[in-house]
Image (cartoon, rainbow, N blue to C red; front, side, top):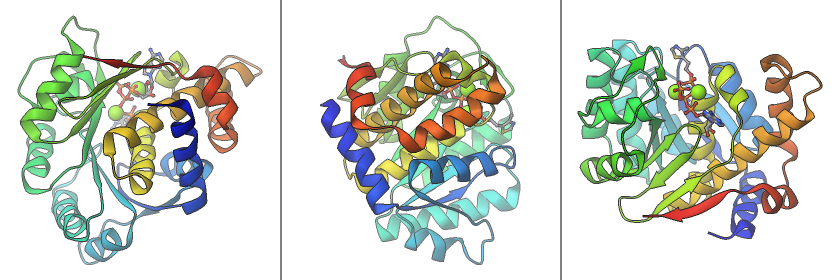
Length: 269
Ligand code: ATP
Ligand code: TZP
Ligand code: MG
Ligand code: MG
């Protein structure tokens, strides 16, 4: 995928400012809304089962995030997901903490079974557990492991008939056939809660303007990772507090030159 294509998709997000409907967790709600605004998208959070279908139908994309799941929220996610499917609105699922508890693992699988999910994004442990493989997980965080991340991602894509993104130091994106690796990002992203969750919603914003979900995901991963690198460079003090603020600034000012200079993207097998 060309760097210019990535920059053009970023520009399209800013021009179209797609509405992204998020049913997300209580930890990251404000950060997700601010991150989407900084990027140029239009966030909305709506959870009541009386309204989610209506909101999902009018959105450019829907993000389902199980980070602080309640039984009623699963119901609302199923209603929203099915309404999005009927309206042709892409659905992104972030299975936060799948594998940590049975409720999370089973809810993620239920959503994947009953909703046509366009893209599944998680850390390696979450994706492994969603497909019934083992990987150490500590709450919502993945532990280091020695499995093959590319084959795990491909296996998940085939098992659930969806596009899969596994993030970490290096990100992997695949539709089960095509595979990309993205090396952008910065370790400070691991010191700010919700950077994975915001990324899932940023992928949703790109999927709202690009129907090839894999291309949308790769453009989102590169843009997000480059913004993080620039933020780390710009932070006066190297710490998570100033990084978080700079990261929002960089999401809003990122341009084609930055993408051309920093994109670390390679096709893989
Ligand atoms: P976890 O809970 O395991 O941290 P997550 O849902 O927060 O998972 P991450 O895998 O942390 O998701 O991915 C969020 C962003 O952070 C992605 O853009 C990813 O590339 C980036 N990232 C994660 N770890 C690193 C790292 N060690 N170096 C650079 N970037 C990283
Ligand atoms: N606990 C439940 S959800 C959540 C925490 C700490 C936020 C996780 O965010 P991310 O993006 O997966 O780090
Ligand atoms: Mg993280
Ligand atoms: Mg996460």
